[in-house]
Image (cartoon, rainbow, N blue to C red):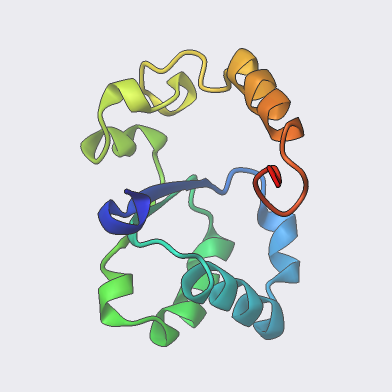
Length: 128
């Protein structure tokens, strides 16, 4: 369903100003190709919260290289509570103004890890 319905992404850029030094043209190109050309899914919306001055500058450089369709799907929020205008409160963690209390379910992660161990690397078990 993800490939048909698409997905919405929330990036939190809090305390990432030092990491922007790695935003060289080569690294940006690699990230762009990996994110938009290699992922078999549709990006419906990309929300960037805790916007900084450096992110604004990087966006000014990147914006001309994106298609108009993609530019319309990227949103910047200086206030995380603005996400409530785009997402139901029940799907947003409390740190962003929503009501989702425990968004990292350790029991689910443990179960998924146990199931993953039942499969050999590279695919489903070989029954033959």
